[in-house]
Image (cartoon, rainbow, N blue to C red; front, side, top):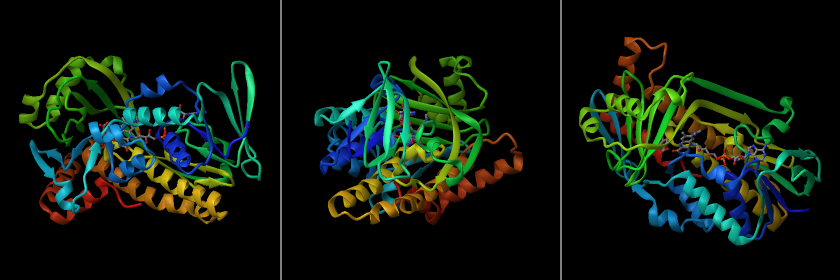
Length: 390
Ligand code: RFL
Ligand code: PHB
């Protein structure tokens, strides 16, 4: 088989890139290790920046998002038993975010790809990247007991943090930066109205909590937990009790509960690989970088990477110029490091670290109080939360 761009990974990065390339007639074949059903069973991001929404529109995948997504003009920072609203819309001159689950983004993109007739190969085993440091790269994989080969011009490594693409690059050719946090997030999904119409990011001496949602009848809640915790140790009752303890009293009283239908623990990590290009291989999204979810940036960063790579590939095929592809890594990384800083900072201010003493607790409370009172400080928070330009 032959294609122009081989895309490894059918998460939001790979699917969005494929749909954007299809709009300008660039052919792709997409490979994933698992099935579409498995991918759609993963519950992940919930908050989209305007830039990500624009790209989904450009890819022709925005219709349901506009019909069903919830526009949020602000969120609450809860600490010392009180709410402090961050007015995203007012502080950023009219910007806002859209609450629409990654599962739904992925479903919409998969439907678009199926409609366009582009080839997707799921449950592809032993995906291997070859000769991307030369002129004629190719990808091999196994399916139904046979080895297959795809020749291509470029390979887009959109296969997430545990994928094969980054690992195919010689270790000496890349530099990685990593920070692992000493806690995780336990997340729960339930068919029940959210406790409040806006998200609540709650700081508490017992640990961080987040009240989010997927719709006005479906809630997504998270509580900070220790890294060695298992889901089995958390009955729904225990989860709801712990969540209530971390919220201001009026929210704890208003919280409505229902049986959970998904519960999972995610570790928190910051990670960046430099550079993001090796010859004809480009790393995109979680394959190149990870942020802790506190700033809601992971999926949005994947979208901005895709934008830069799409523009580079379009320029290459339309004008024969490699300038955009040359600039891909530097442009993407400039935005990534700023989102890394923001996500690290949100995580540092809002979580309980095992080494914290009373002094550190007061420092966090003072920082949050300053944020709530100072227009300059809350503007900086709002500007990053709605997304820096790209
Ligand atoms: P994905 O989604 O991990 O997709 C990678 C795909 O590659 C496949 N794959 C392979 N295919 C072939 N061969 C191999 N060897 C392969 N290895 C892997 C996988 O099966 C998979 O289908 O990466 P992508 O596309 O870069 O997308 C990144 C986002 O998924 C991620 O950044 C976000 O989910 C992060 N995130 C959030 N981001 C936001 O912007 N806003 C949020 O509110 C937000 N909340 C979150 C989050 C992530 C979370 N978790 C669980 C990590 C909340 C949580 C709890
Ligand atoms: C979510 O709804 O899953 C979500 C929302 C905001 C975050 C992280 C996750 O910062």
